[in-house]
Length: 442
Ligand code: DCP
Ligand code: MG
Image 1 (tube, rainbow, N blue to C red):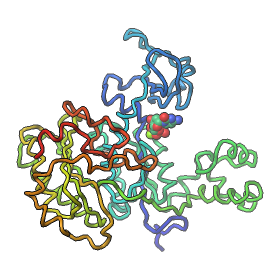
Image 2 (image 1 turned 90 degrees about the horizontal axis):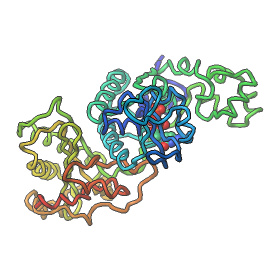
Image 3 (image 1 turned 30 degrees about the vertical axis):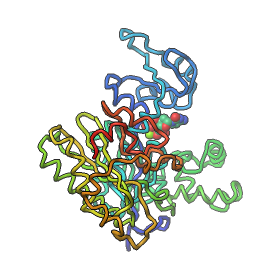
Image 4 (image 1 turned 45 degrees about the vertical axis):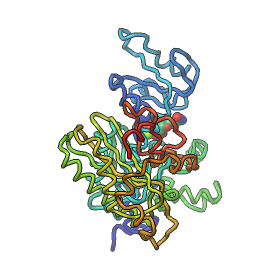
């Protein structure tokens, strides 16, 4: 018998990872102000320094110890955890900060960039959360060490901590990532799903809210295991068709597949050095490899691209992006490589810890018939090298699906001298929205 063949999975052998950042907004605040690490920290929506209005967006785990939680009024949070007035007043006090969405979106974009490099099938569901189908890219044998490496990569390259769950279904992966938060990694192998769910409180089952949980409690159903074993007809009698549905979830049955939302707006590959590198040749080699990989990926997805960009991260998290647009869409690996190397020229002498290559302004219209077409002959490397980044060619103003605003943003963070890049946040994908770009292009 094939042990991995579960009745309730979308397809046999499916491996799903769910990634969710720990206390995300607070983690972002800590990244730019490391003195906040280890402190009770509350991030307030509609909160201003010194005031009492607004609601808690998130709280660090230290602040959660005091009973502060998401969606609580700031006034109530302040009763549980008074605001720290000065450095001497440390005991049982917390630090309060207002939300800064632009910054959090930029950090999220860096994380999503890493996730998209791990699998072609990524479904982003919120600013700090995504599902990855890693069936092909990793498989069950490598899943645990892959997840552990991914967590290490996110921590070292982005400076925030992710909890990860790996399981044969989306719902089990989601519960798994939550299970050992913060700093958690839980792998639920095929065949273990029922046992994994068995002891969970019933309100952790997908679709069971507090009211249903109370009603189930009255029937003696306390855990997901109880629900899994309950008589389906009795459940249906009490809750209608939904009764059967929550029973299926409690049994770990979930036939959903991870489906990416829409066509990506860009494709990229990134890679970090183990430590910052100054040597030009090593940087060029990496960019060449990444350029080839990105062009290959675009080819497999049937995408042509009109813009080629690079990302260069200088220590510690100083992200620079540069891009150049072509007169029309192409599919040409040599061109990606030559433009990327040219853009890298500016960084030849500088220490670099991470490099990325991205193609954007994608065109999927050619379908299977991706060909180099007319542009290639007219816009070979030389012609392209003369083409300035053209802000009019970016996809500014294109609607982005909910929760996807950060999907493909490459320019996670504006670095010194690049201050314009973070401004048009409604177009997080606009890697060329940088006044400084034109200064060195062409
Ligand atoms: N958020 C919010 N209001 C809520 C819940 C969340 O503004 N009611 C924001 C702040 C969170 C972010 O969304 O940082 C991500 O939500 P999560 O539910 O993943 O919560 P956290 O990442 O903060 O904490 P956890 O460690 O539980 O994932
Ligand atoms: Mg989170």
